[in-house]
Image (tube, rainbow, N blue to C red):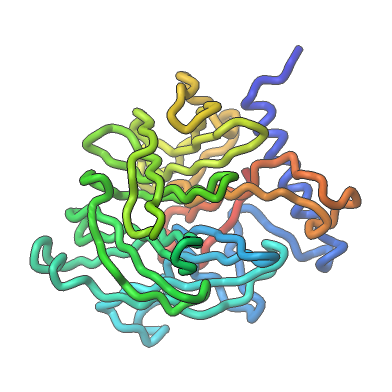
Length: 322
């Protein structure tokens, strides 16, 4: 009997985790990705990269995320929100590059929506036309503004400077994700609750705005997208906040669809994700991952990252296999 797509994806989970845990050729045997565990950087400090995203630059990977270091312990300004950056060559050992964005609530947002400044889910894109790095993030005030913020930097590890904030396509935007297609096109993924779905919106050439590309009518949050062997896989979680729920997926040959109508359970009913999906990134694994057949493409889709419930108390992000 042939395997269903859910079984194939579950095999991808095992393959990716197997590749990661088989890193003995590049790291000590006890050093591996432990799904769901709090992760520490190369200096032994808890990684602060909640709701993050990963960008590959040459042979290096850069992981951006919310820094939720306690204000008192970290000596931080309570009026600001912070984004941290980490660098790795193997997706296991991460070196801190410091805080690349420290931002208070924009005054015009404060006037319109009041306080309770929120900065979540930072995603960084390389924009070839301007030769700059562009960071998108969920910008909000008490979850009433539902906007994205845009910050730029000449260097991948910052510092980043705010340029603007707005509602993409004029729609509410809460959970956001990122996707870079095989042709290098950059896409913002954002969930818009009034529409009961989420958008794939292509960044303009300068990266400062978006244009509508596709809309997926499914009431999900934490949307992520990967392309693998000719298919697009869209992944999302049900709107249960921090409460665990099985992530689901659908497939299509083109971003505009048609998408498979029945969303499959990504984990076959055996695993529930604690918190919303953070991001997914495809890993084409070769020698860097300790495989003997260097240059061969990995059979897995890559990483899924999600913070567990109450992650702001525990500190640290955690990567989990897809």
